[in-house]
Length: 444
Image (cartoon, rainbow, N blue to C red; front, top):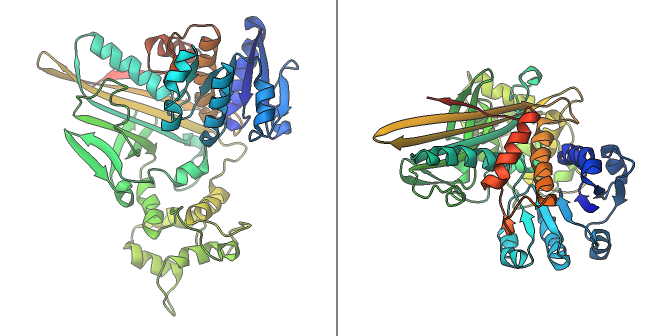
């Protein structure tokens, strides 16, 4: 019997746990789920045979005792905790799988991991994850026919299903709100377009968007991710003229979000004094000049150059409650980004009946014998409710399926790897189709 331990029972783990439990008996797996919240673990696990553990992940002694004899560790913990788990797995000779980005720190362990005949699989969720699986299948298929790829664009978005778009932004938090607030910050955004390298500073990212239309679901706008160039070698695209990866939102989102960026509301580099006593309105006023009579609204419009007739932009800003005299509700002084997150969570948290939606889109341009062609490939997956979200499904299922491949010995690669090879992407994409997670392609 092979022992599988899952660390973390949060929202993204819902479908992962369900899948592994459903396959446990037939594959002779012993499943254990560990989290600091035991009640959360119990709510996610349906099998009596699943071991349910409360654990402090920072207690290395407890972690080491728990994973003794395990065949595979699945970490659904915050990315900052993966390294600690990875070092224990390496010392004890245990395979590891995560949905998180492969950090430079973890990458340094790759040769040691390979020397121990282990697999540390990373980036096997949605984005990163399904984006790698689907892109590599598409790219490999195009190259196999003798084509030369010249352009690659890819966008992913976690949004709200069309019938649940009940605010002007047509958006709510469907994953980690902090990551949304800090999106594309932390340095210049990098990509290559038409043979020219572009380095866009954070304060201009949300001014540069691309409009994409997807059949049945309408128009989406995409803004650039922090680094579109990091996967050029991984994807075999070192010679392409365009490499652009980004995030989808509904049209108009970026223009409104840019107001928060320009004000300084997304800054996470300092703590705002006295912010624990502030109201929403106080917070916004902090970034505006003093005037004895002008209202916060008037000062904001003047500072950002918002026209009086730009009713759609103003409607978005007002809907967030930023002008309310309501206390922010944070127990201690916080950074502007933390404060903005707290304010938005009051409006953008999923209601019980809300359904989310995941949208992914690739565009590949290639040429052969002087002829140029373009293929678009798109995925849309809608959630069921607040608990069974499309985000949780598309993060958890590919990772769970990869776990099965590792446990069955069907992944031959060793070291710290990504799911970009045929032995990984072919079976996972095929099985995802059984769960109605599938791509539609069209040549344009």
